[in-house]
Length: 218
Image (tube, rainbow, N blue to C red):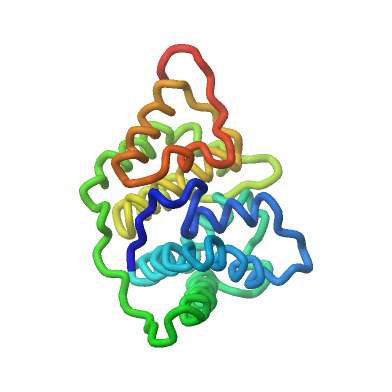
């Protein structure tokens, strides 16, 4: 199911969906309509990346509360599953259903199968190190005066180690962007290199804008 990610010049998968919700979702618009629109990008090319991320989370031991934490932190609490009475894992099952429907528009024989082991497992220590070195800055999200989200650091770490380092890295980037957490140019260069090795287009790491300072390395 895994697509060639270099064809996507913007963020993709669950992280790309959280970007769209943070940027443009309005209360009153059914969120599954947003999921359907994202799944349809590129003539349906984004649907496999979205369903793969959702399945990999569902196949992990992340609890619904942890899924909610990831969703809220990456979208700056633009949409809170608990507020709408949908727990995190059920929400992801709905995402899978929408994406499967889109894929079947082009392939009527498509069947949902397990995502399986994460192809980026070899990057686990590297991505985990990036989360850990930014732990203090990420905790500002936990204590944010207007859009606080608890246990962000621990949940990102568990995403990297128990779900997929690739998804964990993309969600880390989304949290940095959503909460305008500043990094320096040397860290951004590391992220760009890591994105290249993970198979991203060169634009994906900075999609949505990262606050960068040009002083000494952090």
